[in-house]
Length: 209
Image (tube, rainbow, N blue to C red):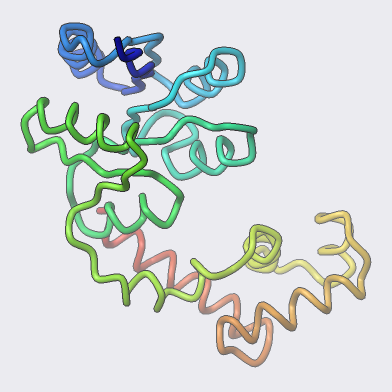
């Protein structure tokens, strides 16, 4: 007899949470171990209770899906995440870039979500059609976590000395990361890097809006 797939569900909408819980519990392939209305609740459970699959809403209060996935990926043996959300704009690409294992649109039947979860448990990635060239063409997606933190701090107008204090690294290391950052973003100086950061964020907000 095969073991059931342990699933945790997190959604800010209580009606969605209740309906999906019922659907998952009726399917003998799955065992619903917990539910949460917040990213923090999901994270707290994931820290103490192992499960294979997490189904989350992308706009989960209060951290949001992208940040939640990033924090989970830093843990040992994190659950695989299925993002269950409206298929708008760039969302499947953003979910893939963040490290989700699958994207299931809310417009599809709940049974399709369950099939997606079963595929992910079997080691597959499941996404609507994506132009992979777009994934590769967004330079911010190619930055390391340290470089992203650097760009974020840079956007606040911090000097090298302030960056050094903020990130807990030496000024020489700051210069090294800045040099790599400029090269990856194809910019020449910090003013251009900050302009790139804000233009990317505006484009992202337009897609999500």
